[in-house]
Structure formats: structure tokens, C-alpha cells
Length: 128
Ligand code: I3S
Image 1: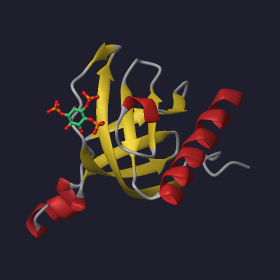
Image 2 (image 1 turned 180 degrees about the vertical axis):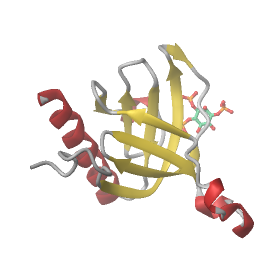
Image 3 (image 1 turned 45 degrees about the vertical axis):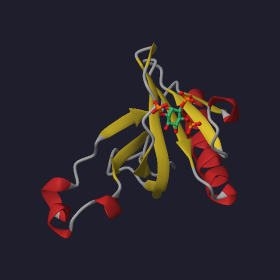
Image 4 (image 1 turned 30 degrees about the horizontal axis):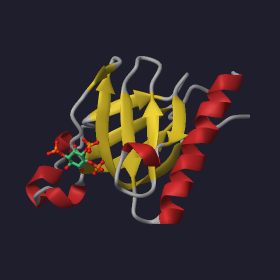
């Protein structure tokens, strides 16, 4: 059975540091603003936290580990998008609501792992 078939806590699939920028909100284009983000893939969602390195120890209280934002992967689209940036290893995630994010890492193996893992979740949700 799937990890969450009993309706319990969804399984953490992956977590790590990526560069992130949002480029559209509800289909409306936004100005790029790249910044490091702690990205967590859990259940059907990609959850973004502030870069832990940019935080002071005192900001690491439990109450401060609130996510900045989170993305529902159901119906989302994932595409390599090296044409959308001068950076290498960029992919674009577009949600069903028309929010678009670019995610990037200088480490080839790392970005490929993220791409494949997110793609697998999207494909699994498409088959449900
Ligand atoms: O696609 P763009 O507009 O060339 O993206 C670059 C800009 O957003 C730039 O900021 P300014 O708004 O100050 O021009 C960023 O610093 C760059 O990182 C963006 O391009 P890359 O190629 O890094 O995605």
C-alpha cells in the first residue's frame, strides 16, 4: 500500500537547499528574485522554508519553522527551463493555479534527483 494509505502523516520524500524564484502568480508574470530556499517534498506538496543559513540561532525556535509557502503538486507541470535563466540546471514548476517557480542548483546530480523525485510524485498523482 502507499505510505499514506491509512490517512496518517505523509512520508517525507526529500529535503534540501535549492535556489528558488517565483516567476508567476496566478498566471501573472513576476519579477525574478532568486534566493536560497530549504525545500521539503512531503506527501503531495513541495514546501518552502527560509534558508537556515540566513537565520540566527534564536530564529530557530519551533514556532519559527513555519513554511514560507507550499505548492500542491496535483496537476502541476515540471519542465527543464534552461532557456529561462542564465544559470545552469534550472527547472520550472507550474501549479494548476498558474503559480510558476524556477528551482536551481549548481550541482548536476542534485538537481537531477530533485527533478526526478518531483516528476514521480506528479506522475503518481496524475494516475490517481
Ligand atoms: O530573466 P531576467 O530578467 O534576465 O532575470 C534576471 C533578473 O531578474 C536579475 O535581476 P534584476 O531584476 O535586478 O535585473 C537577477 O539578478 C538575475 O539573477 C536574473 O537572471 P537569471 O539569469 O539569474 O535567472
